[in-house]
Length: 303
Image (cartoon, rainbow, N blue to C red; front, side, top):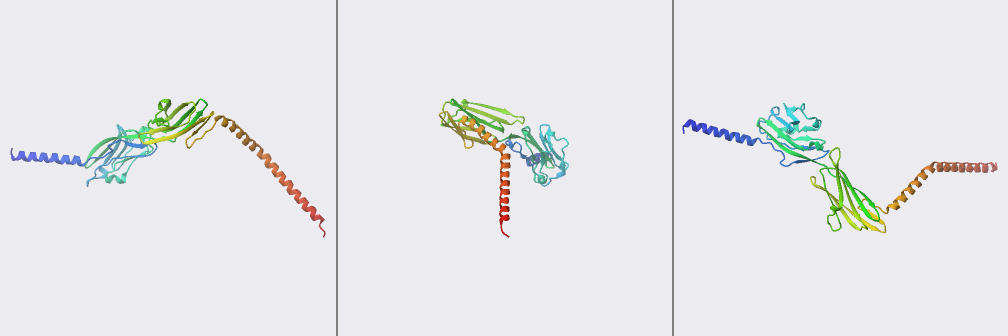
């Protein structure tokens, strides 16, 4: 091998090493696992890049996309939103003051289910350029379930409802022994216009019931678990349901009692003006009588 060939080979190897180290040096970082956002709240989509000593704001480009859809662009030292998708209007921002430290994260506000999917962060500086993609998941907590029950001498029906959660939950019913009795229930899960779910779960128990039933709803993405125990007592055509929030007794009693109470309150309201007028007239007559009596006594006093 000639001296010139040896030098050329060494130079080529050196260039490969420099290029390799250069590429390794510039590597952006994004989440390895899908990020999770709560519906209606903001989320920060993480993306960072190396700055080194050669970083220059005017020669840096940061772009966020979903496929060909532009979410946010930054170049020439400022935001460039002319090509921004209308779905993200007035909902995105970058951390300008932290770019010099390598922060290319995107703040996305007022999240909705239409935001879920793959997001791509692209960064280009004097050091190099790179693009990486990761997933965003959306979730929403299920609120406190609402309990409605129907009791009769023949059976007891329990209906639990929870509205506005995401994704689809798992629903289970357990008996006193902890055995799963979900097969004896009817559960319907419907989707509203925003894509959130409403759960209707009904359990029907035949005959006289004296036991504690547990209702369990789980949202795995948020690690949410709602567990409510319902104690049932039945005897002599009387039924009650207790779960710390709701207590009911014989339905016939409530059917009779409510109209009576309503009638008494209505009668009181109607008679109130007449009672006030009567009391006012009585007070006025008493005042005039007292005054007349005092005047009469004064006229009989000797001078």
